[in-house]
Image 1 (cartoon, rainbow, N blue to C red):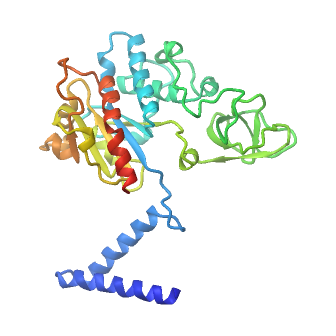
Image 2 (image 1 turned 90 degrees about the vertical axis):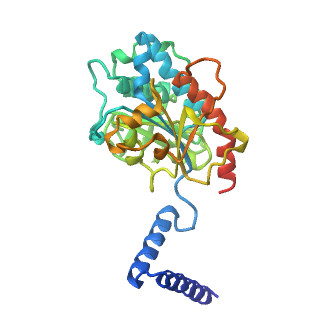
Image 3 (image 1 turned 60 degrees about the vertical axis):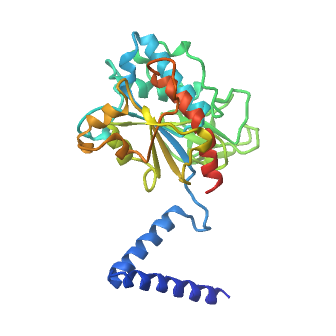
Length: 356
């Protein structure tokens, strides 16, 4: 049966190639195209045919919105509103972009330990701080002026922000400088009454996701394993958002961390198309990106990006939407637009995933 099935598949593939050749394409080019498609399909699927990448929803936010805050305290509260919205609506990635005309080398973007942050760097620092479980913040975030008012912010209370008495299959932890006396490995602070031992040697100060299992006995001498931070998400848990920097709007997609980049791009603006949420169709996709502009909207971000010279903002996105028509105020602040829009997209995103 297996041989017969393979023969049938080979015959079908040969028929597809011959059909392409009949349209004027050379046999070699048709074969190359077929191989590229098979390779791409293999990258997306695991050995058992199950997609390895978890579907994600990302948002892109202009860092310039921080410039509209009249004080450091208000800027901190603004960042907190974005972090809360991202957590409430289970956003997987927040991209903070600048309005620079030329792309910078974003791989070397780091947050300075001293000095004043730019608007984008400030937003990134606060977003990362709030996403980090409280028991890890002291170890992972040195004192900085941008974090002066974070203590007065409401907590995200995300599923991975566990209390000391709570047990879960996974916990976020930080590797310690202290070494175990009678064992090979690394001690990790996971926010429990005792540190746990993992079976790997890692540098201190590294954030890791630890598989805790169901045995709550921390005195058993068990060695725990670290897993990918995406592992809890693969099991249906929301495990916070990641934050990255983009030097301009085109770099948001260009430097996408997911295989094959984003499948579908949505731009939001008061000048966008008005469609009821119940009537909006989002095609089945694995990685969705929703973008929000700064003080002058996405139109300005596109105009200032030399990589998009001559392009209309509607050419940059697959769909360009007004998610809050008939607004009473002349302006909707970005932090307000994010909350409104993410609620607007809940039903269309659910339909897209259900129909995949």
